[in-house]
Length: 284
Image (cartoon, rainbow, N blue to C red; front, side):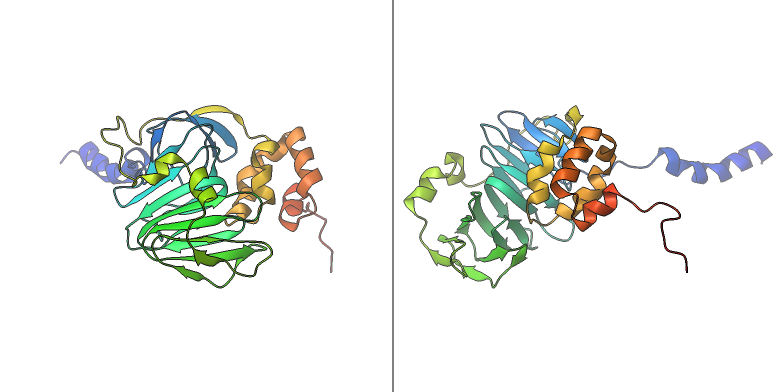
């Protein structure tokens, strides 16, 4: 055997990982967007249309129309207009969809056998199988309608969920800052009237989507402080991850000044804004 061929055979397994790594599998896709969404990914703002792959820690913000995200036929969620949601987890890892809903409406359907969750600043909803509709109103009176399947709802105070309330199918619950726990009942007319009309239908996959998961979002700009300030001040799961993801923006004087003024005294941000320098540690 020629020595050059022998050496080449030895090198191929060493070089292959550098160029033959498979792309990360697409776990969820934005399948419906009547208008492009605003996507905050990492420390940048993008315009996103149907066909993009949705990633963990993405923030999706709708405008005047809704949207839908799918992770196969057994895990789908829809967004109403003027909705802001943070994707905390995606199937098939650990859970089903795990969402933090800052504002607006989410309808989630799951049949993955793993617990799905929607958390708002005032409410936590958990279900294993079925469909739920959750509203985050911004006034502490967030609500849930258990459209299908047994679910649990808990009031959230200071970032912590209280005792869960069991909901049967077609039951409604609303949290009230003046009451210790939500109570189950029928959905009021005001809730039904305000609900996005598309939420009255069962969630179904969007057929024949071209290039699903292959479309690329279009970067518009780096994130401004105003884009993320509502998330930073909300007591929602996943907010602590904003410290490393926004660290690159601390080099921008305007972003840094706004963050310092608003949250500079919080321990996590204080450490990021003013990291200790060599020699600052006390000598013993």
